[in-house]
Image 1 (cartoon, rainbow, N blue to C red):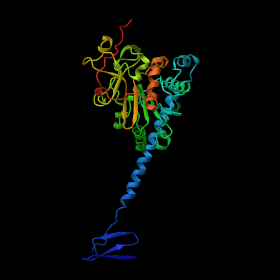
Image 2: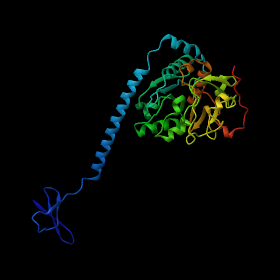
Image 3: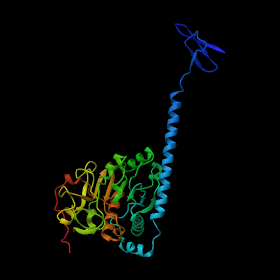
Length: 352
């Protein structure tokens, strides 16, 4: 069957059964060329989206499989010799009484380096919550927990030594940011600042991005209290101290600095053992801080590389108070350091 398309100029024959135009019209050649209309653009777009989603799902599944294998290889069941020192070090009472039953989500997934201290921190967090009654802990290591509906039941997200975090879906990043900016809390332990290379908004909320660790895990380093009387520094009783752990410096282009952060603890550059490891001369290297993020609260500490860090009562108290701040139960001044009168820091003592 042949139909005709009318125009003001002339009639163009079509091959109706094929949905194609012949060209040129009324071609004198025995083999006129058939020109078929393109597929609707939305069909092609749908195919592209489907292929992209399928590819992303495949990559995500491969990442999940790799992580589960690595986790099984690295994290072994605890013995009493490992848990007893943590049990003894855990604070027995919360600084602030919870306003209501609190629930925190402890996320410990790694796409990069896997810290052996992760299960120690998980155990310590669970034990602290249980012993003090300050919060209940849910552990998670799959990205599907980052959705609006699931996050509604939590008061705080704790990133326990996560590395290289990349949300597989945009909605997960949005849910994470909305959770914090909307009035909830974020607490980060050690490598929590080694994440979000593809998510600058998330990286900015933490406050800084890992830029190396000249102060390695085997060294005993000096720390000063930038704000000795701050409630989140109460664990240190107004005194600087020495502690063995791995300490980060932060990339200049991502560290938001004292104009945004309330600095709590820093490396004490007055001690030569600390300052000599910086090639460009002494400078401030913060270790713990807090900040406001929208209507939410953030506490970060770089302590936590080593397993035995979670056997130290002052460090655990510092973390517990930071969590209670992030949850919203412990009032703490988050005015940026640059906006408050300068205070005399509590320096570390001479090394014995």
